[in-house]
Length: 292
Image: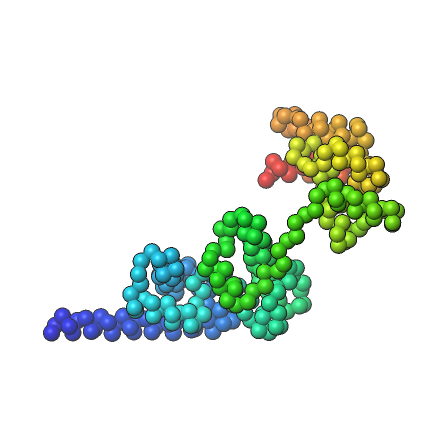
């Protein structure tokens, strides 16, 4: 009889503690604009939130079978909107609110102030779409687990159209030739088909003349683009002397660069070497790398 009485007392105490925690969760939700992303380091509910997330992970991963009481606890917290998956669930709640308010399931890729959309939600949706595209290409994603994908599909998240496969270089070059013959100039970077491609060619060319070993601008491609008058850079084009100087800058040892920096500092009276232009920009970029 004494053992039975003690068990009932413990059960009653456990129930009271649980109800007290649930009430604290409701208070947290009311004080945080209706969201329940309780951090594990929260002074009041941190340990409780951590234990509940462990239960959720055990159920999700099949690590162990939850008792009926534990299953009930998880269900109750799910009904309250508890964020078992931390920031992911919090952003999922923001998406639900955005969809309900606007009727749209596609979150914009760019945040614009004044449009009534949460900046963090925009960045989160961009990450989700990026990782989904990686998985469509057969790559792995550490972020989009099967549970997260299931949640996204359930709420109707719009992943967007799969990225189109980039056309071969020669095909794009032919399109560029046609455009130039019709317009007499290179297409703007905003051009739907060629804008991004010409930007990539200019970026590859810049890496090449700066002495980088990894770039996609072969001599053959450069010659083809030059033959139709393609403009690699606005303003003055680099001469052979410019290229030689850049290559020499890349080949200098650490001691050579350090000596050059000391001399520059003594000449100019300060250590802030410009990196965005001028004959010393290669030294400026080196200084930035050393500071990092």
